[in-house]
Length: 187
Image 1 (cartoon, helix red, strand yellow):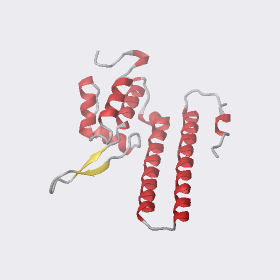
Image 2 (cartoon, rainbow, N blue to C red):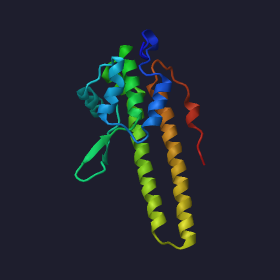
Image 3 (tube, rainbow, N blue to C red):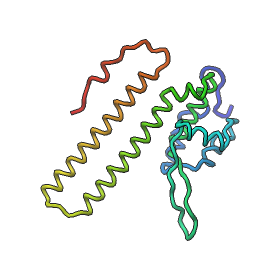
Image 4 (cartoon, helix red, strand yellow):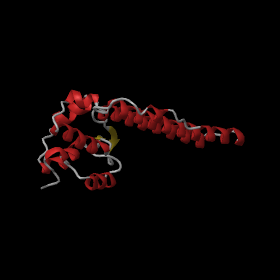
C-alpha cells in the first residue's frame, strides 16, 4: 500500500512518517532529497514541478548553506515543512483542486506566513547576538533584553492570529462567523 490511500482520505505520507522526516532533517532537505521521499510512493513530482511550486509561492524558498571543505560551494536546503506542504498539495490535487485553487487556499498563505516567521526569527536572533556582544550599561542592557523578549512574544502572537484569520478566510464553504476568535489580545 506504500502509505497511499485511495478515495477522499488520500494520504500520501502518514502523519508519523512526516513527523519522523521532520525529526531526521531538522536543518532542511535538498530538492533532490525531497523528490526521493515521494518517488517510491509513485507520486509524480519532477524537479520542474517542484520549482513551479516554489515560484507559485506554494513551497518555501531554499536557504543556501555552505558545504564543509575547500571550494565545495553551497547547497540549497528547503525547510523540512516543504515535505508536509507537498503532501497537502498532492492530496488537494487528488481531490480535484487546481493549482490556482490551491494558491487561494490556506496552503499558500501558510507558506507566506511561515516565511515571515523565519525572517522574524532571523532578525530576533541577530538582535540577541548584537545585544550580547555589545557593551551597554547594565540597566539599559536589561531593559533592551526585556523589550526584545516582549517583541518576540508579540510577534509570535501576531503570527498565530494571522494564521487563524487566514484559516477562517480561506476555509471552503464557510458561512461566516468565527469573528470572536480575533478579539482576544495578548498583553
